[in-house]
Length: 131
Image (tube, rainbow, N blue to C red):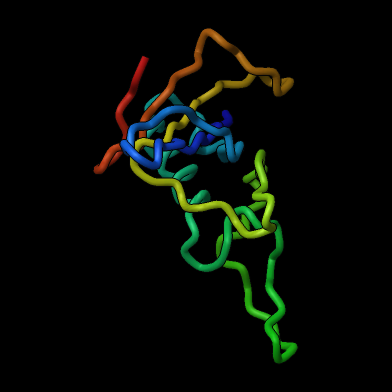
């Protein structure tokens, strides 16, 4: 199972969501594949597209500081593929309310099974399935 994370793009004047940008594809671990584990799979994708202990979208296991020492990037995860990088080289923002998660179930060969696609919105608390 994979989840594509789409960040909402808002109108700067009205605040309305106008479009979405696919920013990440998260490969969900096999133990979370079951249909009854959808919530856990969504939480996994949410966690690993948030900047908590570093940057989820800068694909480095550690960062070198000005003094030459290094610090671990606690948000680095090989299950996350960055689909869109920022032009300025900084990391993507954290996933938040109104962003979308598109769940694609995969066949054993890795191909997507489109009839099992489900879309969820990140709500203020949890996730809400949308059409």
